[in-house]
Length: 500
Ligand SMILES: Cc1cc2nc3c(=O)[nH]c(=O)nc-3n(C[C@H](O)[C@H](O)[C@H](O)COP(=O)(O)OP(=O)(O)OC[C@H]3O[C@@H](n4cnc5c(N)ncnc54)[C@H](O)[C@@H]3O)c2cc1C
Image 1 (cartoon, rainbow, N blue to C red):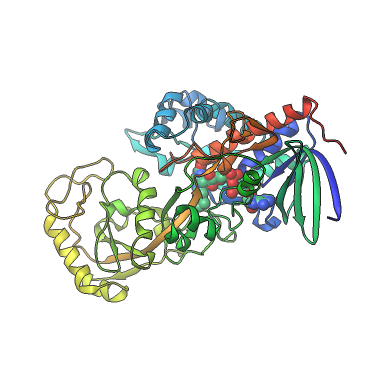
Image 2: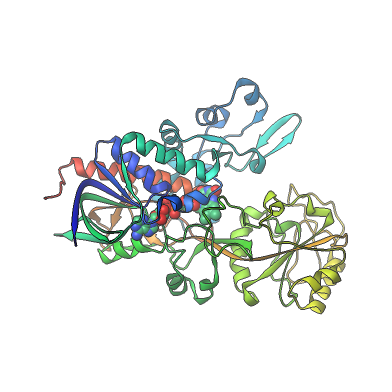
């Protein structure tokens, strides 16, 4: 150990949750230091890669206008039904199959509007997410689904604005600074050891806030907790979320909590980088338009009901199913009738696409068992029932007599050209984490606060299981980041000062 450093609150990580925690502790009077494992050019963690979609409860357009700048004319053309705390809570409970910790879920929901207003007051800019969350009808733009807002310039803008605010508040961020171990005296956390370049530095702090992500980028941990096949998953975000904070906290006596065998994952371009590429920012490799087509594996077989529900409710499950297929690979297949309706990611130059005038020719272009592939398509085409096709509702236009069925949006695939997009499974983030109180205090196995230790963001377990309502990852990071920052600052103020 060759150096020491002293502060009130040390925050580990520099993604959304950590930056919110740092701002919150600083505004309440603490001296704050932020440690980030990545170099500056790879800062921002998973938060950097997001679309910036952020879910909060709001009372109609009036509330939205407190967050997003809209002049009278623009506002007059918008229909914005309210999204109440009860709506948010019941969405969260529904997609997590009732497993979300009620106390933590309630806190997330009830603090969501206040927290987004607080972010705005600290300079984060927001805009309407019109292209993905609204439709035009009778001269008005109608929003739906409780997710009408995103951060301006997506995750990149979010990270830039939060860092700008930290700079204004005079908070230091050390990059290339990997926290390796918590220090503890008399059952109380007293700081953290950090590897900073060649130096191992003993940071003495009254409070430590861990906000350094889950273990999605750690192959060994994925394999151990989620199953061996998860080694093969592509990491959609930062390579740095390798579970360091979780391991440190568990070693210090924290309780493991939530679904350690679960994660969010989706169908991702087979040729996407193995970990998120900070030079190609944004969520550009996802492939979520499968309800309009078919998903076929290398054996030439279908394996899911592509039309079971809207993509929001199936995309996370189907990422996992792709991972189980031979070579963890499948092809999303579409024909000319639906090609123009695919999401914008399918048009990017980064999208891998095979195109042919006939299905036979398409099968020759891709590594698939050709005969079975053609048989699968023939059987599917014969099974498609008549009915009115309408991709904006669950239209019930379905197949009969094949397994798996396609329950909605089943059109015969018979109009060339035909397209095949190879996909694999991309992991977004792990669900398992630490047990915290609704105030962000890390709890021990005895369910008591571990004095001096707080956590936020992906590190919190018990909120997400099976799936999550889109936009809740950022909101959870912000809500619990703000709370953890305030709790840590309060802990310092109560006189829990480090002895130097
Ligand atoms: C491609 C993609 C798109 C997404 N889109 C959305 C979306 O639109 N809306 C939404 O709500 N959610 C989205 N998510 C999920 C969202 O990114 C996360 O839920 C959220 O950003 C997590 O924030 P965090 O601050 O906990 O973690 P992160 O933002 O990942 O920050 C953790 C930080 O800790 C650092 N770190 C790790 N270990 C250490 C260590 N030992 N010492 C110091 N620092 C360390 C990491 O480098 C990283 O910077 C998306 C995720 C991905 C990958």
